[in-house]
Image 1 (cartoon, rainbow, N blue to C red):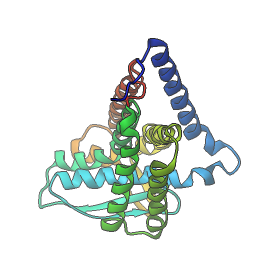
Image 2: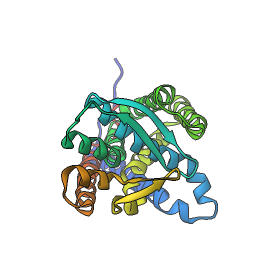
Image 3: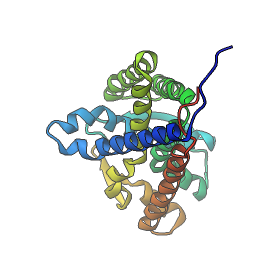
Image 4: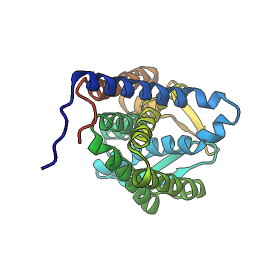
Length: 250
């Protein structure tokens, strides 16, 4: 029988302080790295990843409603789109839900990853799970050269970290990815508050513009609702992850 030393309050506080500090560093990297020389190039794979979060949100919402998720296209400028086909007369509410799935997708994934950082036994499985979803989606839905090149490399990096990295780096990777998803709304700020956009050379409604067309209320109001919902999810995940008993559980 292996004896484990008891976990004292000071140890738990130290672990919580480390968690807070690492989350702050992860958030700062997401926000400020693009401002540094070559920062956009360093962050480019993660820009593609957040676009994948967004477009998978659309696609999975469509699948949940019984629609056909046809393809996911990631473009070299960091934008992208998901194509799905609805049954005849899908209804305004269902159409709005599919549009809503995109902007909420990164926050859902980000909140889940942030929450997973609370428990040591979830750090590596979180990376494995994300890598597996990336690879499966690439095989089934992704239909662009950028997606074929970047997404498998990201998945391979996540698997490599989960297999070989020390615990501290594994947790920081999960924290960074969580903050990446959670803070993606900052990158999408102008898009959320726009009625339409040009993506891949094609003019189309923004997500909030599509929701307005379906449910009539103005697009800017839906942008506020999306930001509030995202903030609530991420806030709840941070509160859970930073609870005082949130140190490593072995």
